[in-house]
Length: 301
Image (tube, rainbow, N blue to C red; front, side, top):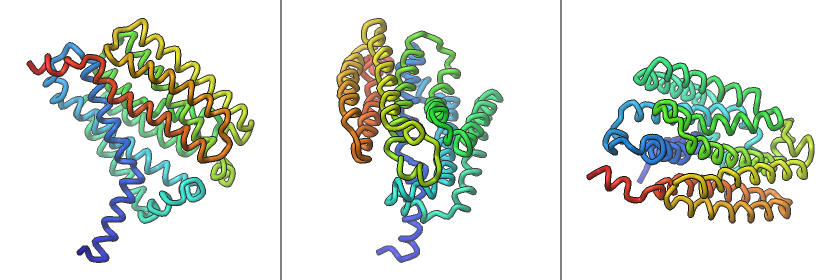
């Protein structure tokens, strides 16, 4: 049996894991490795990619910065989250604001330390990434659409770091990146519809608050329609192996998403829509394996 003190320590650990969204960080790390193996360096031996210490340092630095970003975002949004996410907020409040800030600075310091193993340019990149996340949380997220755009850009920055490291500038990589960016941007816009109550209470100037839900839905629909373009390009113009099955499924799911979007009215509906886009993104990570299902075996041999 755990003592009361041990239970409190465990709850605080779970609270911190909830704040930094450890499951998201693990998924991003997996996506960075799969993208490196299958998309960015398909001709390199598998062992050289998996055991590349520079890549490992980039992945760890990315995870630390993202964790710090979630902490500083939680720090600024503490009052808003009490309204939008009451259950999660109660768990998050087990960790004091002082502890959050201390952890935030430690994580950022460690991220720069890991980046310094790679190169001075990596240090500059991750330092700029840290500043960008702070500036977004402090100022930009309150500006309609600009905040959404910056948030989506920051979300794909870890993949940009790996992309620059491998210096692979093939067109197919940019098309993949545009597809992911548009999906994330649409998800950010849906989150604004989902969180109207808390945003209004904290005087956030989001698109649905300033211009109404109809315009917000129109913008999301435009983003989803734009997402179909890179999906179709990846199906018909590039060799993505069996991953084309994923993109075909995405097209049908995104069409269903738009239908549901226009009949949605309550928060629970927007939560479902948010989860649909999250599902597409998560399944997309594992679908990278479909680009060449024999690739790993061949490279091991």
